[in-house]
Image (tube, rainbow, N blue to C red; front, side, top):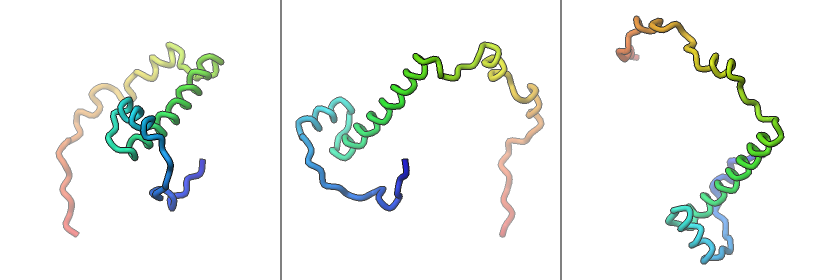
Length: 96
């Protein structure tokens, strides 16, 4: 999806069902209509992502590491103790 930054903060007039918006605000825990609409939009996009994830699990197309791959991912990338000699003191900046 292409997003034009010039339109990112454009104010828009929309007719909103206030009763429905009030109910949504209660469910979402939002205080303003703007926050309610943005939270609802976020939830719609999130729901699509969760639906896509569930479909990938059902279809067997979700890439899941094998137990061996998971073990390798959990192993340290550097030998234990290899960073012990590093100083954690902040470096001083040289005057410009």
